[in-house]
Amino acid sequence: MSIEADLDSFQGPIPAAGPAQLSLSTAAARKLATTTKSAPQMRGITSRWLLRQLPWVQVSGGTYRVNRRLSLAVGRGRVGFIQAGADDVRIIPQTLREIPALRGFDDDALLAELAGRFTPRDFSSGEVLVEEGRPVEEVFIVAHGRIERIATGKYGDRKTLGVLSDGDHLGDEALLRPDPLWTATVKASTAGTVMVLPWAAFLELFDRSEQLRDHVDRFLASSARKVNSKGEVEVAISAGHEGEADVPTSFVDYDLAPREYDLSLTQTILRVHSRVADLYNDPMNQLEQQLRLTVEEIRERQEWELLNNREFGLLHNADYDQRINTWSGPPTPDDMDDLLSMRRGTDLFLAHPKAITAFFRECTKRGIYPDSTDVGGHQVPAWRGVPIFPCGKIPITGHTSSILAMRTGEEDQGVIGLHQTGIPDEYEPSLNVRFMGIDDKAIMKYLVTAYYSAAILVGDAVGILENVDIAAPRS
Image 1 (cartoon, rainbow, N blue to C red):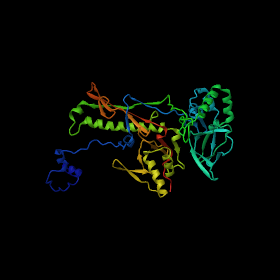
Image 2: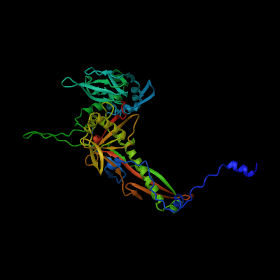
Image 3: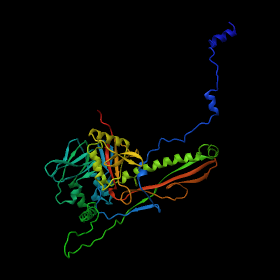
Image 4: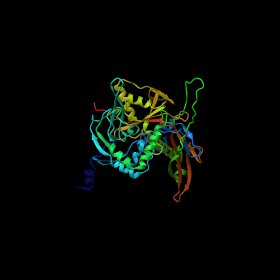
């Protein structure tokens, strides 16, 4: 066989010729055309409703002091735990200071001994831990689970007074009464664990420690002073008298240790090669686009910090007496009404989108349809006329989240944002971009910084609905 025959058999049959091309192809034409381009897009940009709704106050000196009227009521905090295993739950001794009678007690060794006297006790759903009217003989701290306080109403009916969950405590209020009795039945609505301290164990330690006795005596003395419904020292006032009655004298005392908020910051160093900045700026300036996206990311982190920062974030700094649990798990209209009733005025709700969906699901079950309100040209869902803003920066733990309700503004003694405008090289209010030079690799560096914080002027400015179950029930 010839070489030509071999080539023909290898190449196969020659395909039939197609129609001849009559014009320039689009692929070739695009080589000469100008491409219309969008600016760089960023998926991480959110609505940032918290930044938009907070009133921002100028802090010229970098620190904002919240002066308040002297308050004697000690808030009930949450006790913390260490869990080394399913059957090894221990109290963090320092967190016992969250119990009002131990607030400010400075003997860590005694607190450690007291924490060691608590013993864990498991409970099941529906179990009654204590009964109304029985003597208080134990102190309970909820390590895990959900407990309801149920009392007998005026007409003999049973009413749920509240819900206790992780870190809550009860029984310590017996210190304020000579013959303490349980004022409500305590019943578990889920399985869980409580840490239990017999009163006898506490009294033995109380009798042995002079320092503890002195501290508790000071607490009881301050509790005996007259205060108003908010725990502030009462101002003596006379009303409804006639004739020449003696008018009481008084004064308004101030807190001698007011809280101060320092401006926090978010920073990054933006790097741009000088060749990129010099040559590739048509039709868009590369440095401007880099800065624009960097600032967007900084603002996103700023909103996250305003919610989650342990020093000033709203989720961590709301008073414990302004935190409530849902009655049944998912957020119901009753829960939202409870949240509204905790302050004299509410300007907005803030919730994770999944928590909003869960609330709408509960409304639909009841045949209720929440209204909406106009906010800056946007139709925002509302409850009782208060807008509900979505915020994906509120964390979800497991399948639970939180819903915040807040009053804003200095005039209303609410929540305010703190910043300082007019800073050097300001790019946006309270955000500056400072040139840091060019290194030996011809890379330009810019320091981008945002300064901010948030302050809660009075305790009831922020309320939180906690342990909101956002999981959809199975049908």
